[in-house]
Amino acid sequence: MRQNHLLAFFPLLILVFMAGCSHCGRNTDTLYQASTIDALLVGIYDGSTTFAALKKNGDFGIGTFDALDGEMIAVDGSFYQAKADGTVLPVADTSTTPFAVVKFFVPETKTRLSGSWNLSGLTKHLDRMLPTPNYFYAIRIDGTFPAITVRSVPAQQKPYPGLAQAASRQAVFQFSSISGTIIGFRTPDFAKGINLPGYHFHFISADRKSGGHLLDCRIDQASLSLDRALELRLALPENDAFSGAKLGRDHGRELDKAERGTSHD
Ligand SMILES: [Zn+2]
Image (cartoon, rainbow, N blue to C red; front, side, top):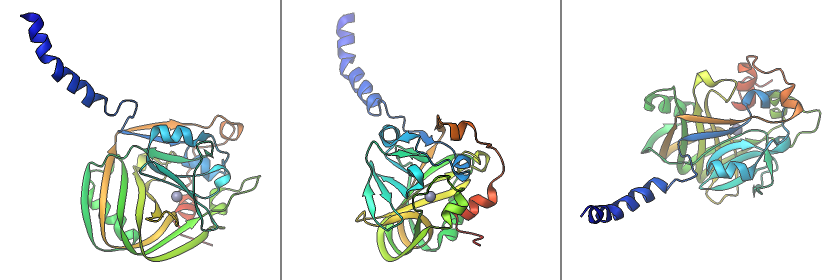
């Protein structure tokens, strides 16, 4: 009798096991980050993490490349390099990055955006929507955008300049009526030094031929997906540039200049 009882439960046990295993080896609530924004700001651009490692830890994300050679966009498991000459290339697993953030994107909230916002208006709208600023969020916005402005930074030569100086040589691209995806993260203020506090977005067109770091946009109608993350896993560079750097200073102004395109000289 007892044995029969167990046998009757077997299919249920197998189902539970399979459901629990659907994300085996994929921690879907963890952000995986290569290096820190502070390290990037002081010019630590040698690639320290391979894209093979990044792909094991996420299918969605943003970042840059060895020597700061362009802007990285990962969407639906495909990784792209938006270069300063305007081309967008697939990324080889053997390529490396000095800074990137990825996650397995599992949206918890999906909604329509309908209004008329630029990037600043969008971030204020998101701030009003989010229940708390104290978690990390992965953010995806799909649509046809009336206007998109992106930048990409060309590969830097050693000795590497700081990020603000490197970004002053950025190439800027403007598009109108372009379909595509805005991809990014919101980082809590308490994590400054590790990542850019607030929002950081990249863009890639639906045809995967245009993209970069988002400087501005115009959004009328789009779909928004949000995925909160409760965990952060940090892969620090194992190299002399990182181990010998003076990190931990307040880089707020340089960061705004380098990543938000504000206070240009
Ligand atoms: Zn960026």
